[in-house]
Amino acid sequence: MSLRVESIGDAVVLTIDRPETKNAIDKDLARRVREAVRLAEGDPGVRGIVLTGAGGGTFVSGGDLNEISRAVREHGGPEMVLGMYDDLSVLEASDLPVIAAAQGDIYGGGCELMLLCDLVIIEEHASIAFRHAKMGLSPAWGGLTRLVERVGPLEASRLLFTAEKVTAAEALRLGLVSEVVPTGAARERALARVGRIADNARSVVSAHKRALREVREALRGDAIERERAVFAEMWGGPAHQAALEAFFKGRAARPPRA
Image (cartoon, rainbow, N blue to C red; front, side, top):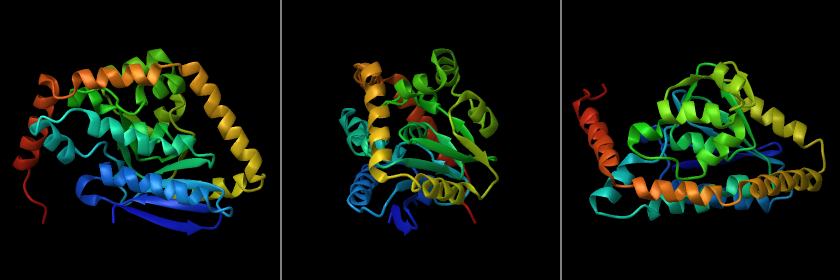
């Protein structure tokens, strides 16, 4: 199963478990995330959601390039990828606090998933890279808009234009993440945060999250729709197709693992 769901204390823990793709996001995973969040919302004993990944190497590597490449080869439009936002945006839309416990590196669409969460706890060895430009695309799930909200237009421009990696320490300095913890500690720290949140009335915390979300939405206007329109323009273009071909050619050239 691509998503493991556990109830631990006051929290529901969602663990992305797709080792064959470095925890990439596909349509099925996005749907499972939405369903799990909705179930958690219906349980009055749940006070927060922790989103993490299996394995120590990668939190989320981005969108599933196998699924994306297939859509491009079959001359499909960008609707498949854009439509996944309807499922993933439940993380921000939910009245339950959502904490990302990033136990590994975060790339591309994984950065957009991270930005949908209310708090981000990252382990000290991990890095973050908005690799969209390397793939001939721009963000599809509101990541550009939320990146500007988090770090401002100057740093957002640097991260998007260069696609360079930033360390966990730099991510904290920029305001991309809430906290940096030792390797192996992100999940437990996130659970502890949910425990502290549970000291307050669920209705009050939910009201705060709702107010924060509505303020951001008022300030955004139609920014996310404009951002997604740019993604649609780039979908299947020469740079996108060349990036996909280079990725799969490079993967075919790598020796098989023992």
